[in-house]
Image 1 (cartoon, helix red, strand yellow):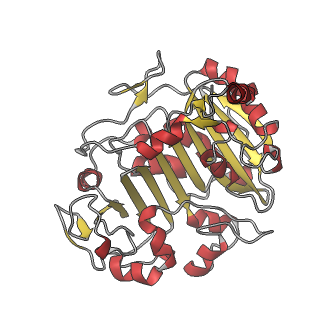
Image 2 (tube, rainbow, N blue to C red):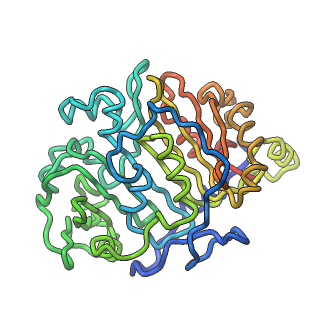
Image 3 (tube, rainbow, N blue to C red):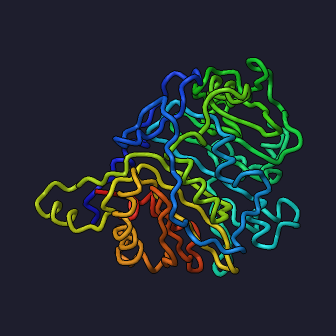
Length: 391
């Protein structure tokens, strides 16, 4: 029985939004104290030491000037919540190309790469986290087409940032959109006329199953969608801060891009593990669990295919180069010797460590993925395995 709970889980569930004027910068770590502060320059994350080896076959299929995940950090609007948020990135076209199905018609291509869940046993594929704004739309593509003017199958890439109740999605691919959207504020359109975040069950639709109004806008040929008018207006104007200036997540994006991932999640929170069972027996069991020994403030998780086999990449953002180096033995132990807190089986049964490297304050783990286990690393985060908690 599990006898601990990670602080980050409570924080994510309880995250609330402040006013959304879009004027505050993204948070960073103070290079001296490691604490979250505003209005500081991004941390210098470079190092003379080499990063993880990159196989030529792992080169990103993304055709932008920067990597897929770094581009997403530049694309997404910065939410008001700075200490607990999640970023998800999916390159459907890149995944299809890796699987050799990129030339299929859109609908067949989407099915072949395993969206929104795992593909059938014995086939390579990916698990993508479909944004809440589009989750119902996947199962009802005809409704989405009518409401917004394009189908889920038209999406090539998308990214999402989440800090409930705030969230925003940026989509690349559709050549035309609009549908039933109506004018809102400035250049924004809207599906629904209620105030931001107001639930209206009678108006549930493919973009929101609670009937909340969804704001829409276009910038640089990409479609943005959000439940917040101020956040999307700032995004459409091209003003405000960018997550690429956040010293916690930018180096993780670089580490994931270096490995050529086509699906990714970056998670920022407090990952401190604390006992759940406060009995003497509970404390004893908690003390025996092999959590990571040094504090980390963000984690990046991504997947790709290399040499015909699926791999997953997990990157940790520690406070300093020194704490990252000190943490490496415990990181390796968590991926090679620890047992799952969910079912008691060895973690190595579902994630086979192939390398662990450090580049400055970032430690990157690469694991092989046995058949049928694609997406296991992200599941391990949500089920609070020891690899995603620290003392």
